Amino acid sequence: MGRNILSIGGSSGVGLELVKHLTSLGDSVHVASRNDNEISAIPNVSFQEYDVTRKDAELHLPESLDGMVYCPGTINLKPFGRITDEDFQNELEVNYLGAVRAIRLAHAALKKAGKSSIVLFSTVAVQTGLPYHASISGAKGAVEGLCRSLAAEFSPDIRVNCLALSLTDTPLASGLLSSDDKRTASADRHPLKRIGDPKEVAQAAAFLLGKESGFITGQVIQIDGGISTLKLL
Image (cartoon, helix red, strand yellow):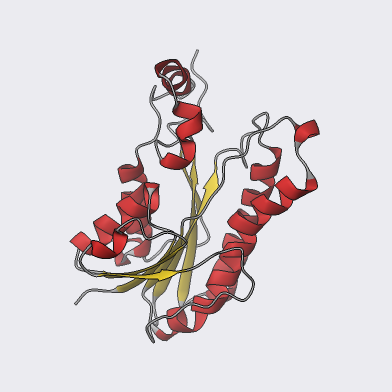
């Protein structure tokens, strides 16, 4: 019997690949996103319009949820002197506060399932200092703290884990990958000499949602081509 999974976001990039993967396994995926992008045409997908920045937004959920994944993110790379208060606040709203609100709304249904899982997303820039990443690394650092705190608080009923990504080939990153030269330069910065594949990331998220990862919680797992831990001579 398939599971009920909530995907906040999911109409493009990693989220879309995850929705496709989960539905291929027979799961029912409840997608809450600003845009449909024809995702509701995928079998076993239900769609509802949802804005993560709205404090009064509601989610229409089944009584029980086996898992939840929070996909929305931002890429706003600027020198520190050009980052405004509004930039910092927007990063927090989309990446951190949006996750807080969605988890709050889904918590009862996740707890009802008995053994459920939450998957969040961070960036390699939290643990590895990168220039021009001050606003996003701050917001995602908050996400990593949230992951560990909720993993402790929600145990043993709900597991909470986080995937910290390096540059991945998604629409969100299109501005950084808009030419062959940019793609090559980005790939060469990674020990594996390529950028991330959203299908690989989706499969990692699916693993964390599944019973196969039942002894994993409170973890921030780097999916970054080795860039955070390796230095080639």
